[in-house]
Image 1: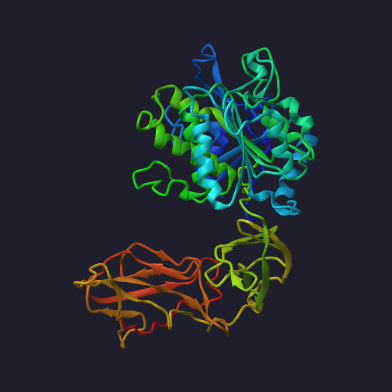
Image 2 (image 1 turned 135 degrees about the horizontal axis):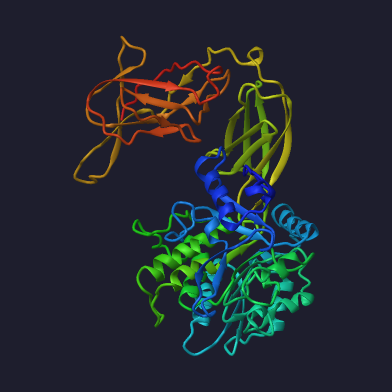
Length: 576
């Protein structure tokens, strides 16, 4: 799906018997020094194969230590003082290879070929319990009130509330197909001595997996309650060893869920309510249009559909909304240590953190690929006749990995590095709520003999390259105009500025046809140390305010393409 991936076996870490700290140190080294620093970290194996961290005593569990994967994902500080995640993480907890095969096949089917015989993508299950002094129904109501006007059908199963809810109602909703199965209430685990593992009200337990017949209509489950995600029974300090709700529902072939957020230990209202709300703002940012602000801790962009990122966004929302202010309305409780840290440690994403959730009926995209000589491939992505912006295009084979995102016109051009061997390369195009497009293309051996002659220049001709200056007038003092940049007729790469201003513009490559916006070109101005690099649309802007005078501008091609372009250019004057 366009994400460069490295697989590491635990047998290659610390002599083949790594501790949790050994694995964290390996991930930390890859994060700081690796050639492919991770944005996602997926752990594969149950707790007896890939150990969890035991760091924080839990006050509700006789101060035994809380099992958590959190510190595999917090990489900018030490374990003792940093519990804010830096990468998107998840775990696929399996004991044997056949269980992994089931889960991988479920994920691939979900991403590439989900059932579309009915629009189950418009359905959401909201299960909760009406209890005096708790806010389970309130939180579910916030979700209902936001998603229903968007066109989603929310099946509310409210035990002891209205509309009434039950176990059979929850099972029927899942069997009919929902994209999200959301639960706010209590939960429990047999590892803690309970008679069941799962939701309390309406009750949905590991034993109910036999009642599910939902096939490949697999929901994301938000099991926001106590203990239903207690997956480390193999290595915790208790005698029982029972599988958690997400493990059972994820491992089940032909039914169950595609992934689940759940807690390893007892968790707390207030924290849980805001965590749950944060998931919906991650996926639908207008859930709270005022969040995040410039002062928020949350650095996760939204909308975000990768499920590992959705979990992180929810945790940051909980941190900003509930932990930092010491609680928030309408809850009567306050946040406090160690509950703050444990609330981050408790909740895990069981599944692939790089998997995107569907939020609408998948659409088919049309894709065309045009080879320009031996070095360039232009990919055009459309929805019918409409160009699709920001689709991720990936071209890869053994010695090749290129990605780019389509521009406003639905196009992106990938440049194949010199030295690439001949062979078949796979092309994948992905965009949220579109079915992925996959094909392949033959790459010939790239050498000097089949490169375009280097008279094809980098060019900024006929673009909006110019001097940008703020212009004040009485009607709108924030109006911005493009002013004229005058070329020094005596010097090829010197330009005269008449007044204070900012450089910006587009870089194009001319390859014997239409000009192609060139991503990755490097612009240097004068003796300033900064280098500005063009984006996917070939655009750059300096952000500096430059003094009037004559400035020398140098434009160099992207790294690895120096043999394809001359570092020369032409710039046209532009009048504002």
